[in-house]
Image (cartoon, rainbow, N blue to C red):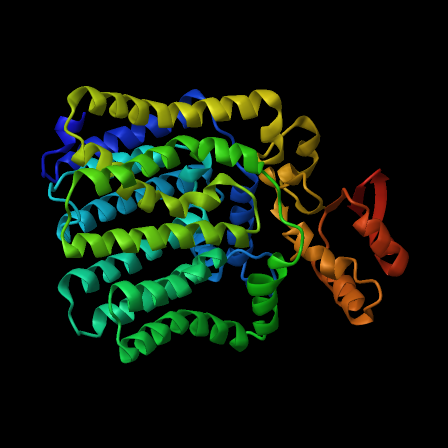
Length: 466
């Protein structure tokens, strides 16, 4: 396998595509990975925006403004299609893999110009089944990679031009508008730009202006539609102080990353011991190392505890693991590492999924559609709780998409303005069914008796429109 990808030939990307299709096919066609809860949330957000509503103002959720805009466009073109999500995610993955490989070739990160980094990264994408979904983390990390490419150009060329410096900031700001935790890469751009790439004060200011520009443009849009306070609270503040969704345990994530992180650690020392590198290559190594530290830091700002939040680590892991296959010359040792990585990493992902599925732990992450959920088919509904499978064949009937985030309004019984706004929304939208899994709507009826005139209690936790 290594011999095939050692040749510097763009047609090797066909081999990368084949690997992507085969490894992804095991998840989708053999293991039958179900729809995930975050995927359904993103689809519902796109569907509601396609109906003419606005994010944050008419959709209570913390999905990034550019991510929600992407889901809106997808819904306009493909509808509520999980297949479209997966195909588009594969295209984004293919772009990232191709870009990181071309980056290493263009700026001579290694003496050998090969397609091994692309092969490594496409295998790493199959460490977890949720890496393959069109998540805000995946889309945002694409622009972080583009920013990293501009930093590489500064390191190698030492040019004084302002275009790449501006693009460093712009790409970083766009990434933050896709996925909020990526905001931690602002200090990364500052630190790496000044220490490694040698930014002057003027370049630093230019990069900072470029970074702020996309965020300001998003803010201006929401100011224009009278939703700036909601945008600031729901996207930048709320999910950092409310309870997060614990879909996957931290121990499981550590288990998943144990093998690739160990190999990256080995690759780092292989690069130190077995190869003398140029000054430019040394700066690139410093950039990647700093990148890895900030990538780990971004995980602590996430609103959902899932493996896909760690997807930003993959470029750095690719860089260090590649050093094993580039610098080691002992054939037998190299064969062991090839076997361990190219077979071990996908097998870890597959076995972890099988264990999660058989143990029932996947139920807190996937959409488990059962016969009881068919009552909502074709209707506009509201789910107040964690069992959102009712939405799979239904539509969102109010703005309260994120139940944990919505509770700040629905449980604010002492604020009469909030209670009046809640009643007005239920009165105007009139969802057909309300699934009250946490007793929130029952509390609302006690405080706003007029809601009782709109809905009748069909069974415990289920209210039907009269």
